[in-house]
Length: 326
Image (cartoon, rainbow, N blue to C red; front, top):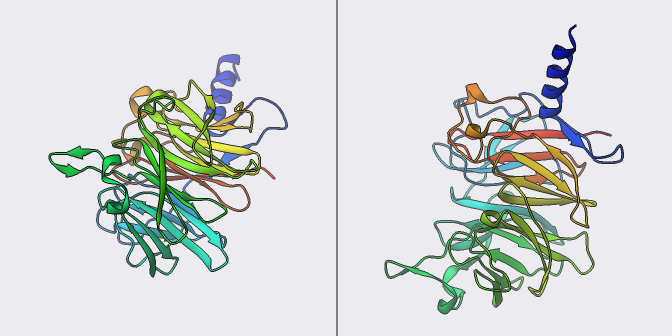
């Protein structure tokens, strides 16, 4: 085998798994052909949403289109069902475990509301956008233009939702859905420019908020009260974040996932795409998908074992799985 061929094979292998900075860093391997759509569908359908994993390993994916809503897949990637009552505009959602069980908390992009649902689809809480003080909601054509892009839940039950496609303000509610306060926005000291998705960062005590400030190409740590604490710059338009142990996995819509440690250092990258025309677009066709190579990461989640799931912004719908090396 020539030296040129050896180098080419080595580069291809790196592009589909993890690029490491040291032997102690996380290592992931892409799982080829993991997701199997419903039998009557070729793909899962138009995706501009999110992914979350229940404690039993079932994977929940929000999609639009023919079978729109929240689709559920088992550990092997087989389609199980759609969640009853789940809308088709959950741009961001999480599964949160609490004393009463596991619940879906979803931010409705068009519906201008937040839903809390049991995994079987029963709605137990609905927070209308109208509960937010009107002076904090931008107007468009004489109507409120609330565009909620993500939601997460703090250990004390407070609910945090971000208006990431409009005001960039984070709104806070108590566990019963009563409005408490707001912070963030486009003005100093935040200066957000599409605060696309957020996550409660439980790696810290007290917990923090980790914000994907997409068009500023950075992630921002806030205190739970909204104080700016730190910034990680030079990212590829970060779109979503998930936390597992000491890592925060950042889904970057320009075709990459970065894992950062508590100090904000990148310890690994996963699925980096070197074809610019295939990144940050929802039109990459299934025929052009490459195992483990990402195009437009839009949602991200870990399961309880640390395996990583990435859903992409894609008109056909795509979820990529990476298994953590044991």
